[in-house]
Image (cartoon, rainbow, N blue to C red; front, side):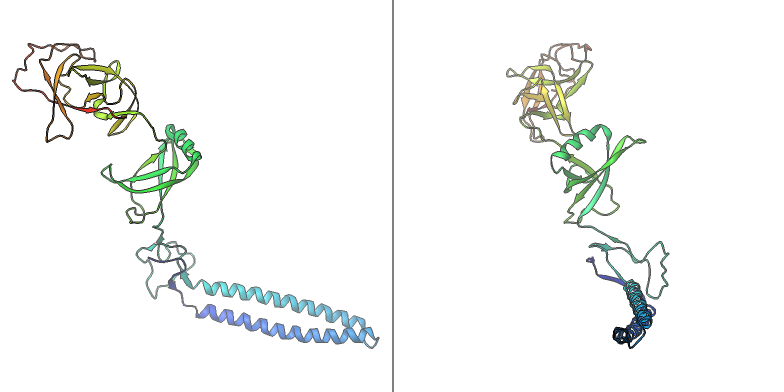
Length: 331
């Protein structure tokens, strides 16, 4: 780990130090000549004023002084250039970061045209992450970005754990026409060094917070020919098929904008023998954190997919009870 200005390497400075000493001496020589020329100019100016000397000689001396002053300024510029070249012999860190494996060892010859350099310094705190989003999601992100800082989460390889939280800093100024995506940049504090340069991570942006909405587990939302629906368990333990409208969902939760009310129970697993009008018994299980529903005296009914199942009888042929998990809709 290095700080800005720390010395990383030093090139042999003796040649550049000698060049600096040479131009410093040259300036001192020219300054002495200039001082003597100014004394002569003062003398010739007084003589010309009293008509004891030639005015032309005074003007010539004045031009010589101006010439020597320009020479001194040129010497100063050469000193500045030589001092700059000498400073390049000390390679310092341009920013806070961490050095990689050095590319040049002691005693190696380096030149200005070397493309590899001496060592690579990478900034870790903070660290930037570049990612692409589909252009269909751009309006949402752009609107949130104009309203304030957009929270960005770096998700681990398991798809659930949050590695670090940062903010969206830059949205590119044009779309990539070949992929239909737009590039963005997020900055993370990376206090625990969980993000590393060159690492691939999943990015999740918080663009909007939905308040006072009904949510259910994503597994409760089923799909049929007529759209999405859910199995709702009524107060009399009877299953009803309820069409629902889903605004958005992820791997865990689905937002229901129409079709369900808060605290209604929906079935999340065990849909094989469920149908509209089936009577179920909700059971608790230690192996599951959610209650389960098992069909009891299940009648024949038409499933919401529009397909009619053929049943030989109301009893299960294997004599076993089918279990279905249920979960309450949350607000």
